[in-house]
Image (cartoon, rainbow, N blue to C red):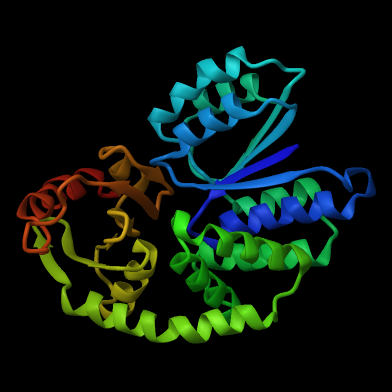
Length: 318
């Protein structure tokens, strides 16, 4: 049995899973092989991997993609060390910045560990499984477009919006549908069009809401920072803020549905900044969580704002 677990709220994660599914579907020797799909983010990743490994009573190949590495993930090392190598095969594909010593440990513990910050996860998996397949190439191209924010393909942005909306366990079947359609190369399916048309008004409303509640703070010896929140992904909020307020030192978006926070900045080492709060990611963009980011009345808490004001200059790129 193949089990894929991937980052749940972007095209790179689901696109990675689609390429994996396509590979096994295209190979006749895997015709009757079961493929199970799981979705995660860094908050619940450790628990989900533990459950996958302990719950299965048959040999599995576990394929992990696009999840990054937080220090909490070290809890998995002892589990990886003690699994039966004849029962489990584990491969991990990633592009987030991970400390060299962690990468060495994972390479020693797993059947395959590959990390390349210059490619998105879907590109890495495409090159590993289906380097010449035109559908896999298109998925990887779209995933790179959204993950590296090059914004070359309108359809990629539409897929990203659909994925961001369909987060959480309540939308599990929709995520499966997205992966299945991508794996088939059915990019023009009427379901995608229907989803996007339905979500356009939702996105417009949330965009207006995010702009309405934006807080601007001027940090001494650092510059202006915009912080906002809405019921959409934090990455989308940073895009909205960057368009509205160009040339800021940093933009921070909070997804109120999951209390997940994204920072985007060319003047901050975002990965190191996010690690200060237990998160991680890339140098120009990263994610983290912050308990009690909001006051009881729903406004951004003064403590959160003060922490941003104090902490951001510490990670300024000189």
